[in-house]
Length: 444
Ligand code: NDP
Image (cartoon, rainbow, N blue to C red; front, side):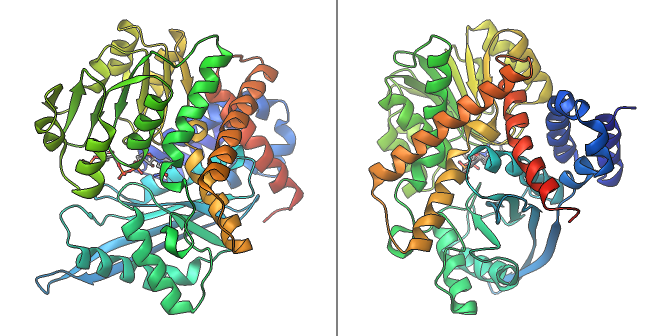
């Protein structure tokens, strides 16, 4: 059996009941096959793949907190410190009832390659909790965040592990966590990113993942003789990534006609009104029904349906496995020619293959949404030098990073005879740097 297949079997056997983690490992290992086979003996002797698929450290802890009725609630807390070969662990904290160890491991594993692709010195990690911030009062969210940090603070630090936001963790949660970290340690340091602008946050961090997604998409289209201006775009999600992806797409001259949340979706024939969307989602934290109620050109639909809308470009920006084979078939049938993932692993493996086989330009999340973590790394740099850069400075660095990422993965795909396969290109380019650093640092 080939080394790649052997390691995949081992991962499945050693990590039972973690399907998302298996899926992420399978996608990466499959596309590394050609690289591994060229150097199989050395990688096997060093157990390089077993090591890269096994987290350096996994921290699981109890998070007790008191709700507004005086009742004690208990959540599970996670931090997976996956790989520090090229820098301190870096990756977000997800707060969502679906969070479990397998989800955090899939996200942490993806983060290793994503962070490598940014060209910045950051290792891979991820964390979170099955706590649901939805419907909780600010005091309850604060109580949870403080309790979460009461345990996590001893494992993180500006030079060891720097968490950030993700689903359910925005500026409010990061603020409460940062306050508690500072209280416990007395340190005013860049230990969390996504901070508010008055206490060490970076301009353009809020916009970074969505804007970065569009900068990369624009470059991918340009290199394939296409232009984003005048195109129709469908977007799923209506959180941080989706909102700023929609904003930048419209700034670049495209028309975004959909957004969604976990209960339904909106079709807006006139193009999404970004100011209204922000008001509903960022200020009121309300459902999309409120958007539709305030906008005559918008139709609200229950459930899932964004991928059935006719479009040129699709940007999944909600969550994992939200775009399946049936959705991919609908997109192709409707003439969609590009898909770039704002979310992490939103497209199932069979849907990805279908899109690629049908000539759709497909960029995976670990490259397309890397603008968030890249700008987090820029926030770390600003914190270290105790300076704040302007919006334009950060935005122009972000754009440079995204354009570079696209060319790195495009070049890697070409070099290994898989031109146009950006999934393989991203995995190969991300892997080679980490593998070289791991090899140089010996068996650790
Ligand atoms: P938010 O919490 O801001 O928004 C998430 C959006 O996705 C919401 O509209 C939410 O709807 C929807 N959603 C969440 N879970 C589900 C589900 N199970 N089914 C359907 N819809 C769902 O998160 P972000 O925008 O920050 O993150 C979105 C994706 O982007 C995630 O995959 C995340 O890992 C990835 N990402 C985020 C980065 C960042 O900088 N924030 C960086 C890189 C990747 P509802 O409000 O109803 O829950």
